[in-house]
Length: 138
Length: 200
Image 1 (cartoon, rainbow over the protein chains, first blue to last red):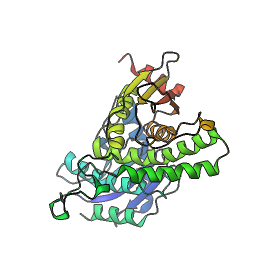
Image 2 (image 1 turned 90 degrees about the vertical axis):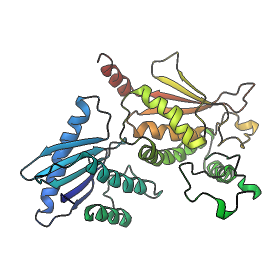
Image 3 (image 1 turned 180 degrees about the horizontal axis):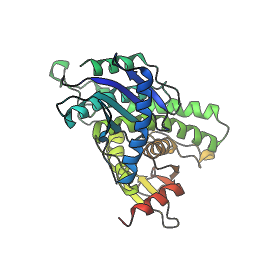
């Protein structure tokens, strides 16, 4: 795997945080929250300026050593992946695969009749967390 | 949720288990009688718990709403990967073909624009599967069990960012006594947004 996933964030349609996972040991949790928060603005900007009808938003921005990628679903739920920058450019297809896996586990979560997607509470589901751990492990 | 002609599951004439396809495939079919039972129970639950026709329609529409939000996520993930609908006509044709085909096995029969108001659209179905086996008593003739389908449509529209008021009406015609029409009245914000997209 040429790059390391630093953190994954799932943000709900009212821009409320649903799930933020810090997968690296070098960055603090707070930094992951900050990054997820700033990426909300960028996502909103991307979808409002053009008639952008894709779900994959590509590279949102790059900081010192981190690159942030975004993805939005039809129901305005946003997935953010932060990776550490490497010399090799990260292919779109790989990111799309990762996002598809996250989307897959999100759909399984929503299909649960006891989960209320309109509530603003964070996600507490063992299956979802397991799936996220798998995404970052590969 | 379509009744397959080749797999008559209720008659036990399915191909023997060793000859069946390993992969279930995209068309995960549920037998219509099973769903009809479930819908019957839902209706009797709604009748018991509600005090009038309006209330009952609202309850059915709530049921449909809960199905719809989950259904939208699932169908977008499976069939429309990588695309979001931002235009009204696109989302309407999405409902008219894909949603109906996935839910009921056939596309909806008609998609019309309301003549009185700019913001009204109607989708009609000549013989909805869910209400095929429901007979409404005379004293409840205002009731339309298509409220369940209306709830699903409302959730799909709401989730995609086109808030609307949806209601279902029974518009029986001679040929199709079970014909149901779903009327969608969109919010002003949706129309404003559509207008802002026009000149480009």
